Image (cartoon, rainbow, N blue to C red; front, side, top):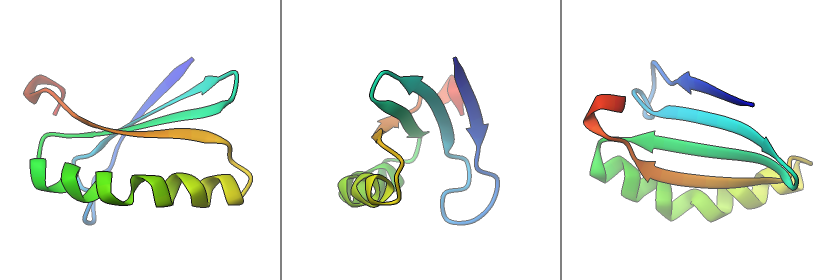
Length: 71
């Protein structure tokens, strides 16, 4: 089962968030068409994933480039 969200305000506005369950926890994918935002998110991706693990949410956090048609 996969659920999709779109962030509508703030610095991540326009980012598509896809969440699905795996055998090892959540898989969270952040997708955006803006290359500068993608680069920023990729720099903090490991820290966010580590913090989610510390809060008790085992997950795999991914940052991807969305196709223009997905935006």
